[in-house]
Image (cartoon, rainbow, N blue to C red; front, side, top):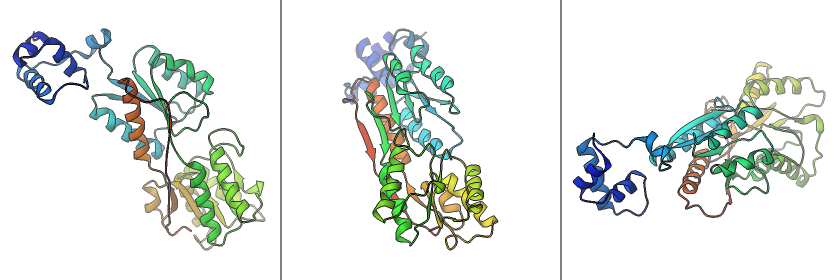
Length: 330
């Protein structure tokens, strides 16, 4: 059986150097690294991950916690994270909570049991006080989260600005009756507060009062969008435009609006959020706010790996820009 000593002897380096190459140690010269890799290939030597993990020498698994992987936003986010992990020798474990608090905590236990070396959380269900103790067992990065006063890195986009420019765009198109769909509640607390404030600010600047009847909370899916359209159709004072919290909601709205005989954007203007591929496929094309989803996932993966390699700077908030993409739906 070929051992690390055999590899070191053939490569003409020390056993320590071979070990450092296997464990992706950063300060190895390219020449020595190539010598070791060539020797490993010639001897058919493959490191034993299980044994290395038991010796505390290996970190090869990262976990990504998502609420629903069927949501395209999270699918694209995980795709970007997985690519970063794979390029750096890590496997990515996808953990779907279905917005269940107990399930989320069970996945955090992967850190405690050393089945995952680090975790990226893309949406959290429990209060931060419930999650924070798990940082003792391994690094946690928040991606697409908006919690204040955490001591872990956070990657997010400017939700306030995204909503503000979306609603302002509708106002500039002549709309003053603008409905608003939010994934949470219409409060100054929680992850949706930045969007809520952006909506209110755009209306305030235009001298428009918020109409509580036009605020639809806890909306996430295409089916939710269809239901919202049904609610709007039943209103005596119907909005002329809708800011949807996601492209999925917007898609459901458009489907139901067309079925009801409404013309988009003449009878109802609709703007989404995310710029998923569905935005271009819809007819008419969906105006939306583009989130840099791939960039968010890439950054989250890079930060987590830096933490695992103990080369990450102090925890910080990385806020990425958004962009208005104008198509035919407005």
